[in-house]
Length: 113
Length: 113
Length: 113
Ligand SMILES: Nc1ncnc2c1ncn2[C@@H]1O[C@H](COP(=O)(O)OP(=O)(O)OP(=O)(O)O)[C@@H](O)[C@H]1O
Ligand SMILES: Nc1ncnc2c1ncn2[C@@H]1O[C@H](COP(=O)(O)OP(=O)(O)OP(=O)(O)O)[C@@H](O)[C@H]1O
Ligand SMILES: Nc1ncnc2c1ncn2[C@@H]1O[C@H](COP(=O)(O)OP(=O)(O)OP(=O)(O)O)[C@@H](O)[C@H]1O
Ligand SMILES: [Mg+2]
Ligand SMILES: [Mg+2]
Ligand SMILES: [Mg+2]
Picture 1: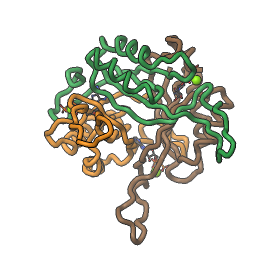
Picture 2 (picture 1 turned 90 degrees about the vertical axis):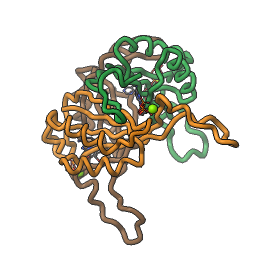
Picture 3 (picture 1 turned 135 degrees about the horizontal axis):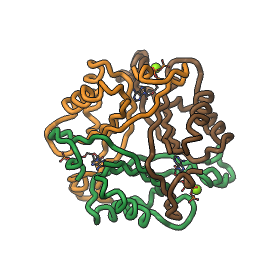
Picture 4 (picture 1 turned 135 degrees about the vertical axis):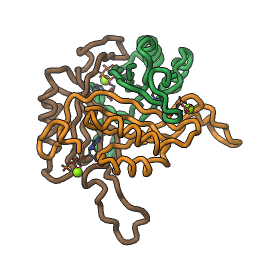
């Protein structure tokens, strides 16, 4: 099992969710985060602004999937999240050792779908 | 060392914390997240609702523990978080390579307790 | 590639960011979290308080870096985040298997800088 973590532009969330639904991925966890990146701190300071805006609001989407869904999921997220402009975001993949469904106590990749 | 990540119903946070305290686990990090899951997007739209409610507020609890505490911690979380109804949540376990206490610079499993 | 996760005092965020910028680390993701730790639940209850304050607001900083930057980054964070008082925070390191830049589709450690 792998965790896919995508840091994306917030307005892209619905499109990403729809594309993942199409390939059978329904479970995900979303967090509002502040992103810093190349260009992330270069936002202009508007006259009257009280402080320098040096982060950009982003959404972090976390999806735990069975190994065979990792690359389909990444393709789906990249296509839905891409605008072609800077700041489209990053995707990070890491390994999940165990997964459990709390309601039933079941474990393993079966709990992911 | 392992990280236990539990996505749970927010009203269960205190019970989970109490159960973990009982087995000697006091350190944890909690984040308010939006959960999507099977059933998560099936909330009825109430008349007059301005948009489809398709996520459910959840709490993400993250706990880094020594290996021998992983299964006791998971048992404690599952028992405290379970209502028996859909949406009780998921638990994911992953590996932590290194841990540091900032105040002292110490590292290793000693910093977790 | 490794993910460095630092749970720190919120007022230290700017100093940490500056120190990381100095060593060439510009990309990071920041989340507002609630921290529980040794001492974290010992905050006094002020007269008139409606509930026991048993968590402390913290910032979680996540940085994915190439392996050779892990220890420089940890040093930078520890120095900038340390006050010497309890609650300075924790740093956790884990392994990232793959990383992608959404705008270009590139992958690997090149996308981190
Ligand atoms: N190394 C990193 N570690 C953790 N989070 C990162 C890292 N790099 C970027 N991010 C997160 O991803 C978000 C988007 O990054 P961004 O797309 O701007 O990357 P970039 O390398 O500048 O690419 P682009 O040139 O397309 O803008 C950032 O706001 C931040 O939240
Ligand atoms: N594959 C997943 N990856 C990441 N987060 C997930 C995943 N599946 C579920 N979650 C998170 O866990 C929360 C709870 O999931 P939920 O308990 O509804 O799972 P379920 O499989 O539908 O189980 P149940 O039948 O008991 O409802 C979701 O709202 C979401 O935040
Ligand atoms: N085992 C843990 N797992 C996950 N998060 C933790 C853990 N321990 C601490 N944290 C997070 O780190 C924050 C800071 O912890 P803290 O610095 O108080 O640790 P401590 O062990 O009490 O060290 P100190 O003696 O310096 O206070 C906590 O509020 C919590 O968010
Ligand atoms: Mg950028
Ligand atoms: Mg469900
Ligand atoms: Mg403490």
